[in-house]
Amino acid sequence: MSRLVTGLQPVREAIRVHGDRLERVLVEERGGAQIEAVARFAADRGAPVTRVARGELDRASKGARHQGAIAYAPDLAIVGLDELAKDLAGDAVVVALDEIEDPQNFGAVIRSAVALGATAIVWPEHHAAPLSPATFRASAGAVEHARLCRVGNLTVALERLHEAGATVVGLDANADKDIRDVTADGAVVLVIGAEGKGLRKPVKRACTELARLPMSGVLDSLNASVAGGIALYELLRRRPRG
Image 1: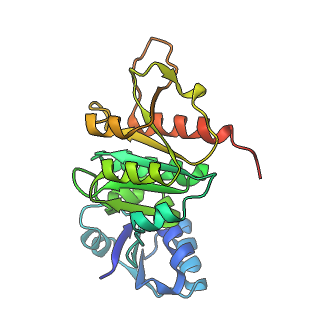
Image 2: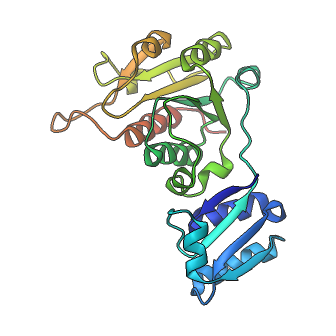
């Protein structure tokens, strides 16, 4: 069964990654220069393109914002935890999400992780945002490039990655340690909790250390995806450049 992708940038990235493996691309007839550019890009990559009325796009998008373009893409590949742990390199930085249920936050974290060069994204199958058109849009198409690992139990997954050699760093606003003082050497798993709730107690216990972002005191918290992006950048910034 094909996967619905909506929006100009998510559709562009789906075309870039999947090309002629796309089932089809629908674009709005007389949709303007940007939409025509998407249609040409799809055709150049061997994807079948159909121009349709806006009303048909509205129906096909099932309520998602489409901006005049829709793609039907192959399902995203999901790697298993054992595979991820086995392939964990010494310079790996994995992002783990603890019950982030908002598709906007989920997609934004994926976007930051891909943009900054994280190795993979890990999240639990329950109490988490779905891999939906809203998540794909929030990631601006970055999900097409991400290495994704959905697990049954996040605590068990963190313990397994630690056994494989990773330091597991949980973001916690009340932690004594500053993220700037966390050792960035070796494989690292950065764990981001849900906005408002933070990390669950079992997840905290599975972390080898907890760290907070330095805050001015005017605000005591940040959006989960923003906090995760800052922490990820700080960890990767101190890595040797290859």
